[in-house]
Amino acid sequence: MENKKEMRTWLDDLNLSHPLVIAGPCSAETEEQVLKIAHELKGTDVSYFRAGIWKPRTRPGMFEGVGALGLKWLQKVKEETGMKICTEVANAAHVKLALEHDVDMLWIGARSTVSPFIMQEIADALEGTDKPVLVKNPVNPDLSLWLGGIERIYKSGVKNIGAIHRGFSTYEKTKYRNIPEWQLAIEFQNRFPDIPLINDPSHITGNRDMIFDVSQTALDLNFDGLMIETHYDPENAWSDAAQQVTPSSLIEIMKDLKIRKESDTEEEYNRTLNNLRTQIDVIDNQIIELLGKRMKSADGIGLLKKQKNVSVLQSKRWNEILGKMVWEGEQRGLSEEFILKMFKAIHQESINHQEKIIKG
Ligand SMILES: O=C(O)C(=O)C[C@]1(C(=O)O)C=C[C@@H](O)C=C1
Image 1: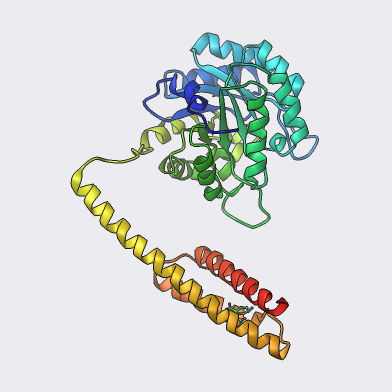
Image 2: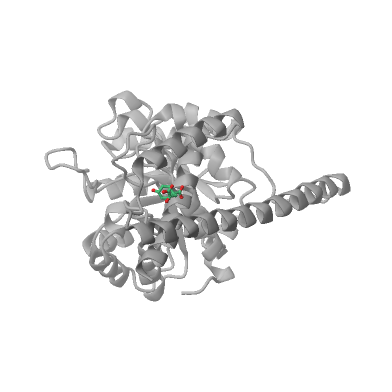
């Protein structure tokens, strides 16, 4: 699959003056609930109304969605509000039902994207549809698996495609429900700049108080839109209660978000920007030169260790370096997370150099 301009035609055709907004409850619960939320979103920047009909849950026995009945409620939303409607599909039967009920856009969830078998089944069922199909990232941070899933859909003749970044599972204790791993989303955009990329701050944060912040980061990183779970009574929602916002909060969030342009033509801005970029180029070269020198010293240590038959890994020395560098970093406004990541990468490269010498 190659990047193609046409991949974003469906989004361009909407002619929006703002990022695409998809909103609605995590789950369709009752006809009343669905219609009440939809009417509160009518006339806002929301283009697509979402609601989960079939809910993939972590454990059995939890609310697993109302099923096909909910598709009728979505159709009513379209009739009464004019909003387009979308829902998640997770197998061929869901696709068939959703298309029969004229759902305008479908998305595939993170738990389906991980399975090439289910993706192929869904792709076959979607064959040739002109409805946009959005593919959420797989639960694990694997860009190839994500792109592979999209490719299966694309190869079955679906030309209106998109991707949803909903964050990634982790064992680490973090403030997020699913860590964003923004670098992965950036790499996605580098590889496929014309596949519309939508951010899902609800699943990334798992917490409505953080939705605005993550949404703003996404827009600062040139995402094309946002999918935000919305419920008139979030506290009592049947699923994902902590991460849903009320329609009025959503409207506030959309009003406060800053939409930034890709560049500016003003001369003074461009002169200053170029100056700073020249400084960065010089510094980047110095960093590479210094890292090269550091590895030369590591090569020397490798040679010494080889002669004396000493092991490469020296945990005590390594922990001393890490501790010192975290402190030094803090003095210069560099986060602990960054220092640890960078020095772990440097350590690994140093070990690789020494391994080559010791084994050579
Ligand atoms: O000090 C050493 O013994 C090294 O091999 C150097 C170095 C490093 O790159 O800083 C690399 C491996 C060890 O685990 C500790 C430190």
